[in-house]
Amino acid sequence: MLSESIELVVVTPGKQQLRQSAKEVQLPGADGHLGVLPGHAPLITELGIGELSYHDMSGKESAHLAIIRGFAEVLGDRVTVLAETAEFAAEIDLARAEAALARAQKRLASGDSNIDWDRATVALQRALIRVQVARKYRGAPHSSP
Image (cartoon, rainbow, N blue to C red; front, top):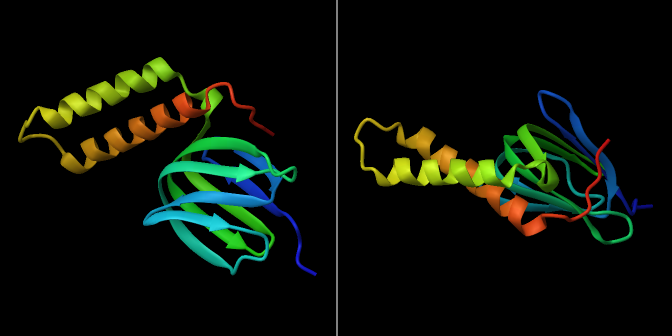
């Protein structure tokens, strides 16, 4: 019999950010978003910079996290996310994230030939997803361990 839930575990170098039963998980893969339902085929994937979301067992959207790179292991009954950074919307300091976004945009627009473009682009993506998650889900309920 196929399980109706999947266990979602999100871990960063500093702590276990989340352990929750879910009906569905959406992950920011390195090459696009990945949807996971119970019984999904096993896989290991690289994560990019983006938003992780899931629906709890009631079917409501329970949490949205800004994910900054890492890996995910998907098994039929569990998704384990190992992320460099994973932040709930409520944990993001919106003013600080907006300031980082403005700095990253200014740096890229400067045309300075001494800029490390890869690093500057990642800084822009990181700031942008943090701002988007914080703005979009400010005040939304979230779970934490």
